[in-house]
Image 1 (cartoon, rainbow, N blue to C red):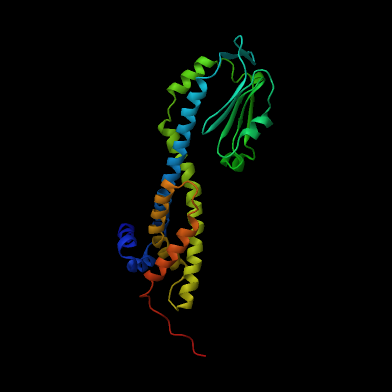
Image 2 (tube, one colour):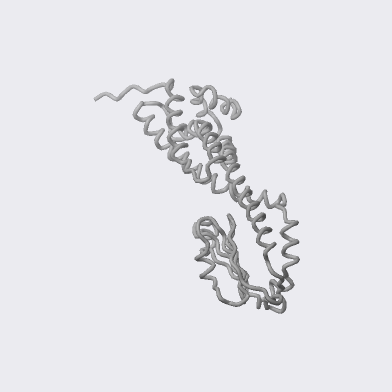
Length: 270
């Protein structure tokens, strides 16, 4: 018995999944990584789509930028250049060389999933949605780059437009995004599998099956294959979809079917 055979059983012959209790634990862990990869694929695709939308919207905004350049820590504009606010599906952009707006104004603009960007009088600012991963990891979703630091010296409207026109997502960025997506997906799946295994163990005790917790965990892992695939397909069409309940519930139902032929212990005498 190997993981590939159990994978086929999980799709076409669920009643044979009880044999998963004989699998070495390290192979079960590798199978969890495989399932996590399936779950991570639609999330990664969504991230790439968002990145592509931001690139496309950035080109649209760049076309409306007046001539400007950042030199010696100062934002300089051409004659008659005026500030403006422009909104696309993914970006709310502010160009304000006159100092009428602040970071708090840009942050207030950033509603829903839109990113707030702004070339202000003294700094470039980024305001991510409050629910973004940056807020969780870094403790903030607001970022400031003062022109006085010299980081943006030499930037002008022409090379910004050219950079956006030629921008593409390199392969290593795609790989990094996938790895960062895979890690939390793996952790979340582990938590779900532990919940399934606890429920499966309680069911086994009630049914007087000779199954240990580790046996239930192994069987549950392979029982999760079908709900994981279904969840992944749903994620491709629905971004805001909580798959935890679906995976736990269906996996438990499949566990009940998979263990129907398990040997039962004699009930204790009273």
